[in-house]
Length: 343
Image (cartoon, rainbow, N blue to C red):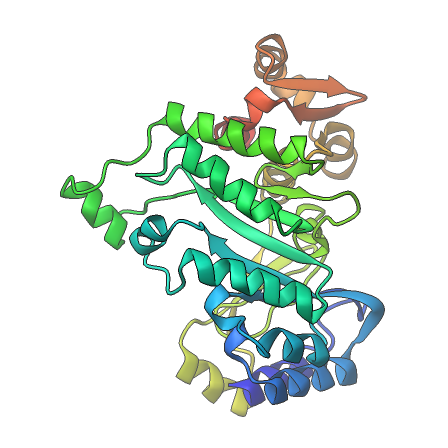
């Protein structure tokens, strides 16, 4: 698989107009299971084809159970300089409910290992609005995480999909999903505690210490071109988006034949407007309506004037210099607002 990924990197050498890389992200699946040798192989290929900046942000997603010593030191020596750690919770009962392999003690030990090993850029993933997690337990989870002073937090509400174990439990009434009111209160707790600890709430689900916003995530929100390699990987250019096939065996077979097995979608003007709207509304920088009018000849202040006025009058958004930003109350309804505004 690593050989195939490296070969795809070579096949995709002309995909990006600017071959200077500001961010490299190992994510999806469990990339922390890669050996040091495999990481070096991928890095060698990336340097062969592209030009990572000296301060390139290089992130690897990892589970706490993969970060026992000496793993963090090996990751750091291989070139990883940022970790995104899927802690989710420090409570053993919640972790068991989420079917996680680690327990709370293991999560804390993993974070300590990463700090001792020299990592100076750590992001912690937490989940809230979990059935069985009351407000004091959520506060305790956040405070335990804050003890390690992570540079970033990603906090997500538990989403229950129909075709999953959780969805099946809900259908059988084994689990009662959190209400919208409970979800909103938990979001308020997360925001209040992290903002009070000095973290910037720079995107609905993301908080960071000043200067430590995720370059990887921010590139999505800014519609920067990016290349994804490997099965299921997505790539984006100004006019198109492409999706690699999911099947590992078929992926490797196609790469061996010198082909990138992907579907390509040509983006319409409406696609581009909607994507810009949906991503930027979630951020603290807001949605620049003047930019949309200039780039796409579409005037939201004209076509959606009544809806925008309603957002402003209900304290769900503010409009300053043609930039529409959601208030805290608006963030609670961000997805619905974006859907209502889509063209």
